[in-house]
Length: 293
Length: 325
Image 1 (tube, rainbow over the protein chains, first blue to last red):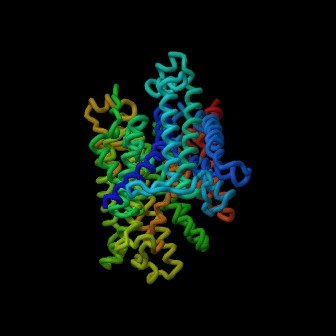
Image 2 (cartoon, chains in turn brown, yellow):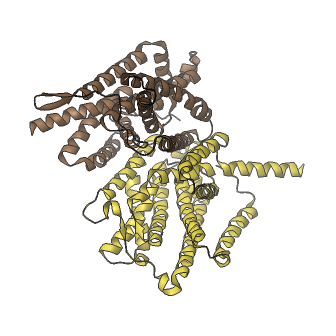
Image 3 (cartoon, helix red, strand yellow):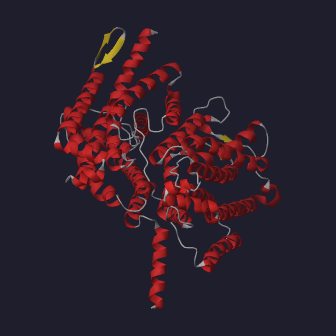
């Protein structure tokens, strides 16, 4: 039993590190732009396919999949901002409209992938074989790779946001857009950067997630729902809270799968989030927005 | 949004003309496929009008309405299969059940704001879907759904085609009723309260308008009608299954509202008609359909952020003013 428990917590940690990557990308967009990006799951899917293409069509070595996918999706993110989200911001009904437009984009991207790549599941080439045993837990090298990549990416992100000038500009814009603009920060550029970064993170998490499952045109949807849950848990727009929440959710999911069965993982999670929101309407770590007249 | 109540004669005339045209339609044609499609149009129009009341008028960014619609169907199916009570008897109870569910969902959800409401209601939608589809006890039929729970008995009265026509009128009457309620709500003190809340929530609160209470009221009311529609549509199809919860359908319905014009009176029905025509004309090339729908959605939102109804109204108004000068 203890071995099973340790194994479960361990797989919860692996999942949690991928969830953290996904959710940080989502929460970054919400924090800066106040936009819920429903195309995030589709971007993950495209990212995973790019990494697959790099190997199976271009014949490049598998480790190049991750960086190439990150950069490609960053460019896609720039395009999405320029063509889709940017023109909508500040127009009437922009909060519902961006929500609908990004979900329309997700729909289009998914059917595009279905058309080009077909419905068959593909394996993710960015993967390593092999595993070893520690205290009754099977640790695969792939899991270690996932945790290493996710950990390094999150630490770099942290450094970038708290110490570099563009990172600080992003945080300033998230905190108080008007004041940030008065300090000479070009909002347009910040939004563009945030969308690029977030899409890049989506690509990364797509590559990592598909390395434990598979790549398919719609595989990003449920992970995206989960990352939304994580974002609410941590408080939308709150990056530190999102990180904690990702691991809480990852471990909870693994525990529920162990004790109740896999099919109850999502319902229990949603039930939990409903309870959390009733008692803490801005998430576990979120601060309540002060409403002024 | 705050369209003036002027042009009252055109306002009265056009909806009645459209309803009259739809009422004579079954006498002019006997294409089953087409009539079926129009029944679906009535049902979806009803959902989007009521959803629009919640979304555009009350300002609740709720995504749970499709789940409530399905619950209406499931109520009738479950009661029919397990208790042997026919759809005719469970029709109104299904609406009441859905109103109750709406109230239960609204109580926690409406305490939140904007995006949190959207995400929480989306989560609720998924919970309902997962609980229904993961059930293995046979209560909801799990992934296969339920069927064989009877119908309203129109087939015995009017025959097979007569049943279709009877369902057609049933749906039309239901839609007209729901639209009438929508208009009454918009013109009532409730509508004024929402306008006040939109203009300045703090001021509205100071003169005793409780956002929470009014939103809860509209949410419950619309759940009632959506539940009725769900019960009817489940009976019309003769089956309910978890495929009805698909995210694609949810987005399609939401797209109808947004393309038509969130908060406008007839916009969502217009959007519903447009998207259904588009969907149906592309049915031979299904692999391109979702891409076309997604693309059209994005284009409309970029060009007319307030929706097509608003764009049309402005066009008409512009022409009128140029005519006068």
